[in-house]
Length: 212
Image (tube, rainbow, N blue to C red):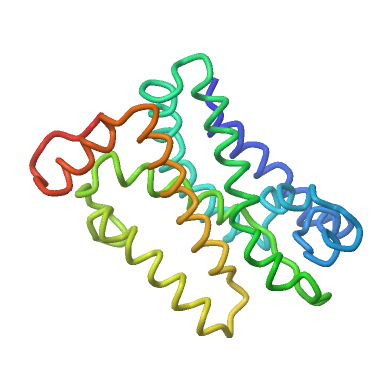
């Protein structure tokens, strides 16, 4: 069973339904005031299964399709084993949805005009585990080594969030990526330290073999 494909299928299905159903969309949005005042904590998760439009959905699901299967296989083969690995990938993804929204919750908990949606925070969390497998693997677009792209992504997300002036949830991108990096390093440190050893060997010897 491939949990990445299941997540993609569910997200596409629910997002498509929400495109034409304002009530469903409103019930699933991440609205900090609704969480604080009405105890609607489910919104920490549900917002990740709806999107603003088709392009927003396509971009997130394309990125999840690139990163997710590889991270899921690492969880199964090297960290948690075949029995729990895929389930723990699902837990990791859902926790990333919530964790990437926490900073915006505290920032906007009294702002009734604020709402957000999209899987970007959780997708960003899958990026760094993917990067750490082979930090010098080149992306086609943008044409950069994975490690450089990861650092640039965090730096730009921080800069864009501070600059403001857009409807993009840069803060969720930033904290999703940080969550993914920190949690993956912590898990690897305790459960499979050879992953970190291979990462550093690969980072400082770019022509060495990748972990996979």
